[in-house]
Length: 213
Image (tube, rainbow, N blue to C red):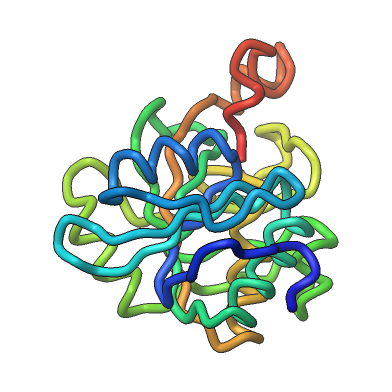
């Protein structure tokens, strides 16, 4: 039995992973017919059910940051999950537009939680190519394919490498962990803050800080 998750309903082989438990609930209500809570242990809310097309799907909260997300991913894999999409948020570098969707082409490791899964500092982790291609097609003109960087603490614009469109706290460690678990994983992030503003005012307004995940 996994250490973090205590499933109270069957889990699907395919999942959507989100940081925020509230976001997990909202997506479950939007995407699933008659969703059932599949986990509430440790506040990591999870829901399982069927989509209107009849496909089994689990929507699982992963908590804040790479360590929590990587552990939850390991539990899900132990419970039979084989394919997942991370749906999260990020802070945008110059050129990013608030509200736009970023389909992750690769995620650079800029924190210990990523290097703990075999990535060197600054090394890129790649998502599953087929799943990423399908995700990019589904997003269409509402987003773009780009590189992000994952940190274990809130980054500033001056700390981002060239060519990086956004910064988050989970994608690189999740991709590295997925590779080790032989789990197909892709990621899409919504830009919720601007790192240029962050340099002067701090990472996210306190009124929106809870949305980062």
